[in-house]
Amino acid sequence: MITKTNNLRGLLNKIEEGMTTHLTTTYNDAGSLTGQTFGNSVSETISYINVGTVDSIWSPGGTFDYSYDANMNALKSRSPVCSPLCGPAKGANR
Image 1 (cartoon, one colour):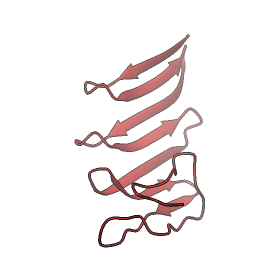
Image 2 (cartoon, helix red, strand yellow):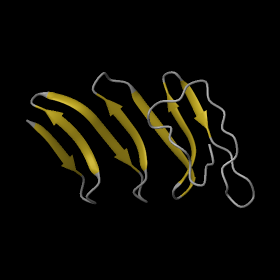
Image 3 (spheres, one colour):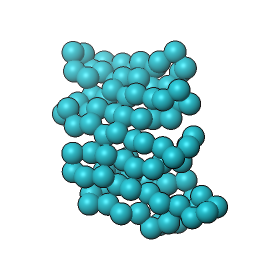
Image 4 (cartoon, one colour):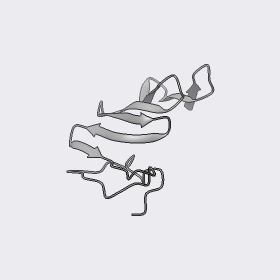
């Protein structure tokens, strides 16, 4: 049986199946996802410029950096690798 656990704010905290943990997540005070650890022990860390605007995503394969113009529109990103989490940034046009 797959069990999903939420934190006190109602955000996803953990996905487990029996004795196996498939995903564990962490959030900052604003409720933005700051990290996730997958069942294979691979972790990703997300940092933000401000609430909801991703600065970078770090994983063992490298760092995916976002950059923005003066109006906070996403510019071309630099990345050695892109994990499944690396979807378009806020306002990204990729």
